[in-house]
Image (cartoon, rainbow, N blue to C red; front, side):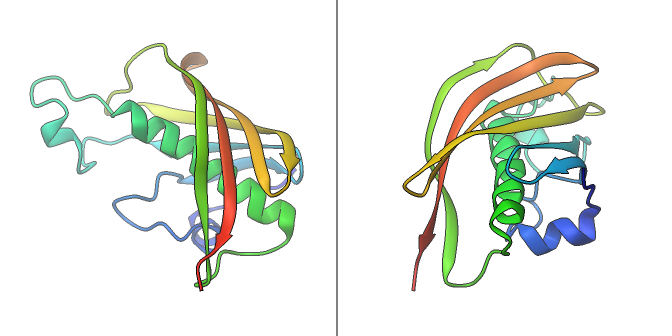
Length: 148
């Protein structure tokens, strides 16, 4: 099992503030699964508008955080890093369920497992937890596309 700090994560994700949603990888087994952390703070740029008097992390960003963890797992599994001539895209999101809101001060534990890889499409099972309580789950489909 491998862990990664933010400096290494920046080598495997093209995302940057305010859209980088993985702060640390606590475990990664290439070809199998990843466990990562997103620390949710009141300083996130979406909180002033979502919602003013009761800040809640948008569910789509919880799913995006799972996808970013999946991308790290995929790049590590492929033995490569993102480049200027490719983008790792969502190809589909299925069976998304939100169980409870995510608030400032929460720490999202992102658990993503590779289910299968067929013709360049990666399918994952993702879960997001706060304090051992499930907050969201989804099946994610992603693919690496050449853009140049």
